[in-house]
Image (tube, rainbow, N blue to C red; front, side, top):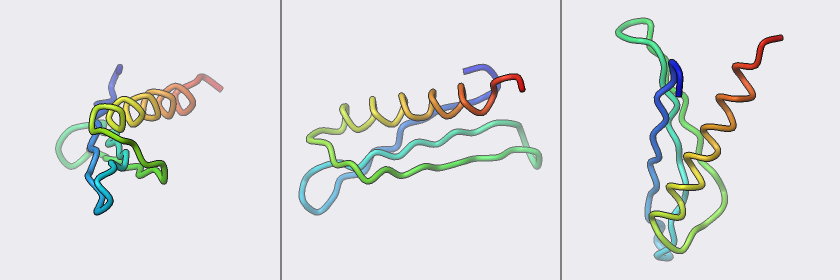
Length: 68
């Protein structure tokens, strides 16, 4: 999304549910940054957790790149 790379990183919990995580990266080399957000919600499957994570990442980029 623009200069940002958004990647879902769901992980399976001991309960069998999935936790949503998203990585939002920008830049290259020594000027790169990577923000990882983890969410409390639990999801029944990998795909649902991934969809939630990507949606949250997109929202974060939209909110944080608005012109002031």
